[in-house]
Image 1: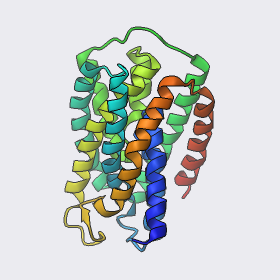
Image 2: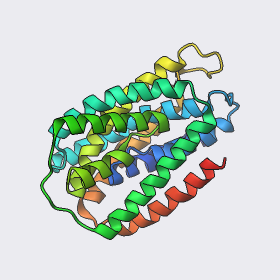
Image 3: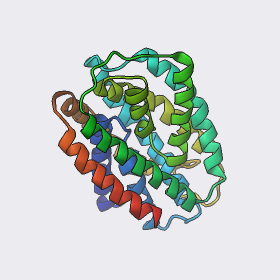
Image 4: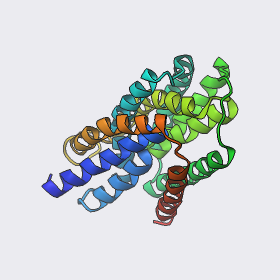
Length: 267
């Protein structure tokens, strides 16, 4: 790994970590496009670039979301009961999604990811219009488990932590205040990404097209600098989200999501 590559990956991890903390989305929306571009310019076989980007993204998300979840928890913004039920469902959905992803081609997976990004942009724009929601969270275990399964499925198929789906579900359906939805999503993402990442390890194990230092479809070597960058910036992002009205940045971020999604969809 060259010095330039190291710096790029470190900076990418920093950006993903900040987003993980600020928006509670895990950071995959930055990690996946960056990893795809990195692998496509590093001589990695096109047969495995997408799956490798998704699996590696999930590994990094475990650390980024774990760091932000700890900060949200200290601020009293994590509902652990909801995390438990969502987590149980997400493990089942995450493993199932990884199995499905293992049999799909890279272009299809990229298009699924692009759609998820567009839906995320719509959700973020909707939050700008709706404003605050300070209602008391409602938690119904069967519904949370079922929702968690959907979050886990999306996470594995798109290589993201699942926050783009978990946050609108918690906020709009279960009536969580938005900041508590962010914190609870961050904690749930740790479980979801672990399950999805394990599935990618299993699905890619022994694949002859993979580069060195990988565990299945998880690239440990290039994930390391991104993890190092993501952990402290996730704490920063969570702190900024706790004390700041993020509506203007949310709008800018939504536009970015749309631009990246369109590029991926037609790539």
